[in-house]
Length: 383
Image (cartoon, rainbow, N blue to C red; front, side):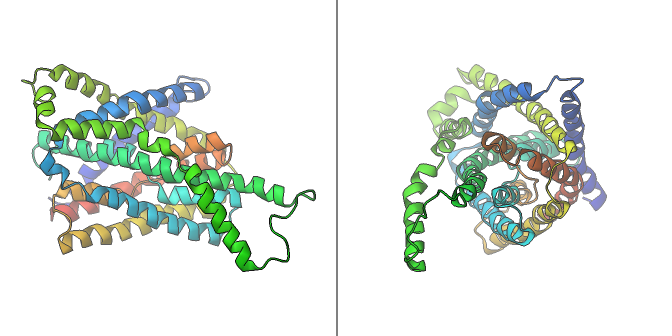
């Protein structure tokens, strides 16, 4: 395919996202108030507990067999690497820009946690429907694209609520700790006569004691995770698959109902995306250079490093050469920050306006960045 054709194919899903996002922002305006704060919360719960798990379970059950399951092992590793590299770059960025301590977790989260759930499930299947798609027959492509994107959504849910949630929680509390430590009535944690080694030993001991309590265990039992388990069980256990999957299956109506619920996920999360961007127009105290640095991390450094990692894995033979699977792995490095962080800032009451501004600018830039990177990734995996 020519570069122009690849560019058009890559840009169409992005344009569709932008159109529905704009509708979501319009519905969230005060004078319209259809997707106000309360409405977004309720719709988000429906997506989280009903639409999302139905989408994940139904698509994995259809596309994943025991044989295909063995080819998906690299995705959790790939997502772990995006979080690892993003966290390191975010930590460096927080040090360089000297952001307040209670915003460090927000910066690290913005750089490490990408929108690996929402955007791939919107963009990747849509590319299968474009004329001249290089990923083969539309039905087969769409089935695998939904399975890959659904798995990405579920795995990202584990990482973001198991890791990012705790990073932001700990960071948001640092300002309270600072106030407590500077209080004249506060007794020192350690006697002044103790040396630095004793102080370090005490901090390590406190960390090891508190760490098990700080882990958000609920992340591993989230509805999306349960959806993955159900989808894998149905797909890989032949009796269950024959019972539920296919037009001739005795209980295919259950699968059809799950598909109907899952189909509501994409428009719902895209509308929520647009509504969540609206508060960013009100501004905040975050510096523009910090936003620029986050954009550089997410749209330049991470995609370049991801390119080396994924293509290197293909080159040494540890990753199969399926173009669609490669594409979604590469795309995971080029996505904007996760929307779920916005919910976390509301929970902890710190960084809400700052993250709204980060989302507004990064998602605005994503319209260009994602189109360009998607075009390049398409050219790379089909050439």
